[in-house]
Length: 94
Image 1: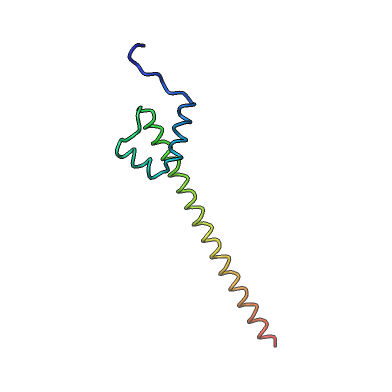
Image 2: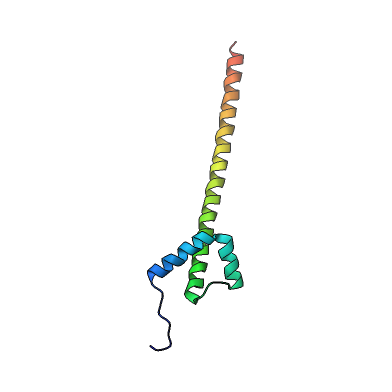
């Protein structure tokens, strides 16, 4: 149809994703908020999707790190308690 712009293809989408990666989350977030450099509208939509994916990845990493820290704390505490019990048993049997 005359006057319509062609739809972007997968190669163009991949190029934009590469640009978003190079810019980083904060820069893309600011560009979305300010409406800068995200033309055509499809690029802006992809920027929002890309940013959401990155935010979910960051949330998952943070949750995993918290779980790991908690698990490590409990393991260290258990080791300390077992060591104290071992020392008490050794002292009481002298």
